[in-house]
Image 1 (cartoon, helix red, strand yellow):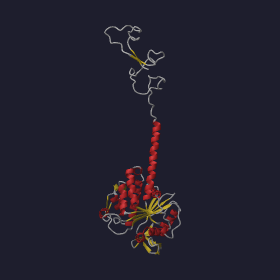
Image 2 (cartoon, rainbow, N blue to C red):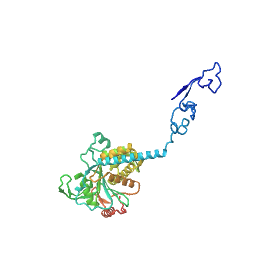
Image 3 (cartoon, rainbow, N blue to C red):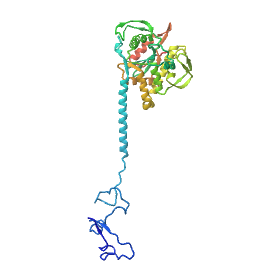
Image 4 (cartoon, rainbow, N blue to C red):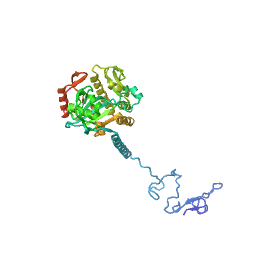
Length: 403
């Protein structure tokens, strides 16, 4: 129990004290505070220490009460373990990235418009090596306002027709992109109606784009397979508005135009040189045909060139790793594309990556070999086409060249 020792009891200047008497006119002796371990206690620690004499008032004494250096030294905080903190932060970031990627993948995959049923196509060729896509650009104006039609120079024709058609073969010997001119003279064979389910045709020799206009994607696939002998594994279609929206979502697509041209029908007005096209300009670029002497062939070359540039830009890290660009692009694309029922998002990504390879020079880009024309229709070179299709079917290196 703490006690108070007052003057006259052995304190300074008291009869029993050890010091001299207090001189007159000085401050009286103040009481001293002692406890069971007081200053005068045998084996004590020399009295109560409040900490004020050392400036150490707050904090925890090292060793705790009665421990080593009790009342004299204070325990310091341990240095932060930066290696562990960095490791935990990295693990957290990787986990967030993986979860976001998986969620985005399944969300995007669920948004695909799988409206084309290739099981309706009859008398199909045997599957070959690699994967072959039929990529179609239609002149669909569905959902477009009158103002949009005017701005994009699409006209107001009802229904939809194929404005461009391409075969993309993805294989182990390089990727090959082949344009099929819509004015190609082909045989439209017997087919099963997509709506009626009844056998119809054959329709004889027509322009290739007539197949789509007559009975839609399934008849177009049937016609391409019949005239090439090559099985189509996947179908991808995009309309006017969707195409322009994708380009705008990317912030435009850079392309080098070798020779300037104008076309009042498509709204094209381009100077030569490298430039970035927005959605409206891009649509005019791929649709123009009347500005060229070989209208359909030159247009297919422009379409190949632009689609390869678009795929090349869409597959860059600046797009994929930037959510403010990736998600608008995905939304624009998913809202615009029509694919077959067996198409997955992985298949779609593979297609775009192959087009990027073609653009980068790791693949082949060409028109279907043409032997001449008749009555405004383009005639395929049968010998070259047969050899080309055999090379694709067997996934061999392409040696055939086209116009």
